[in-house]
Image (cartoon, rainbow, N blue to C red; front, side, top):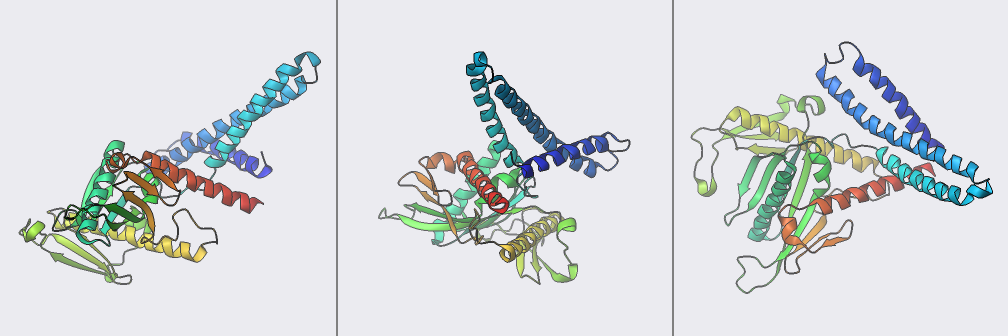
Length: 361
C-alpha cells in the first residue's frame, strides 16, 4: 500500500474517533439534521475502518509468514500462508481505494426523470412511453415511489414529454447515468409494410435539490402563469385554473405542472423541478469550464448524444459507452436494469481510479 493511501486511511480512523465523541455527547440529537449527517458519515467511516483493520491483520500475517519461512521445516507452510495473505491484502487494497473515491454529493437524493420524444414522430412518442414504463418498473422493483409531475401525451399514445419524481435512498446514484439519447429500432405499430424504423428519445435525470439551500429562486425573476389543466383530447379535468407554468426569466427555463387539483401543490412541484433544472444547468456549465482532456463516462453531457440502442428485431440492447450488448430486450423493457446500471457504475469507478493513478504519478 502506498504512503498516500495509508495516510488517508489513518486520517479516516482519526475522524471516526472524533465522530464517536460527537455522537455520544450530551445534546447530540438536538439538531436532528446534523445528527443524521454525522450518523451517515460514521456508518461510512466504520466500514472503511473495518476494512483497513482487516488489511493490517493480513499485513501482520504476511510478515509472520516471512519470518516463519526462515525455518526449513516450515517453509512450505509459510509460503502458502504468505501467498494467501498477499492475495487478501491485494483484494482489500482495491476495495479500500474504491471506498475512498470522491463521492457525488447528490447520490442519496431523490430525482426528477424527464423523457422527451425526439426524431421519429409518433413512434418516438410511443417509445417515450415505453421508456417511462421501463424506469417505473425498475423503481417498483426497488420499492421507490414514482410521482407524475407533468405530461404532454401524444395523440396515438405515449408522450411528447413527461416528467416524474422518483424517491428512494440512492435513487439518483443508480439512475444518474441514464441521461442521454436513447435510440430504438423496430417496426412501428403504424407501419403497414413492416419496415424497421429508427427513432429516438432523450432522457434527463436531475437530482432533486432543496430550493432554499441549493438554488436561490428570486421571485422577481419568475413569471408564474396559471391555466386550466386539460386531459387528452382537450377534455377539461378541472374547472379552475389550477395548472401552473413557471418561467425563470434569466435562463428561459419553463416548467409546467398540472398533476394536482391544488394550485398550491402544483406551484410547489413546479418550483422544485425548476430548482433541479437550474442546479443541473449550473453544474454542467461548471463542468464545461473545468473539464480535462479525459472524456468522462457520460460523454460531453449533451443529452442529444446517443448512449443506448434498443433493437427489437434482434432482441438486443447495446450501451455504447461501455460496449455492453445484452440479448434480453423484453426483460430490460420490463425494468430489469441492474446489469446495465452495474456495468456503468463499474466503468465510472474504473475511470476515477485511472484518473487518481495519473494524478499520483
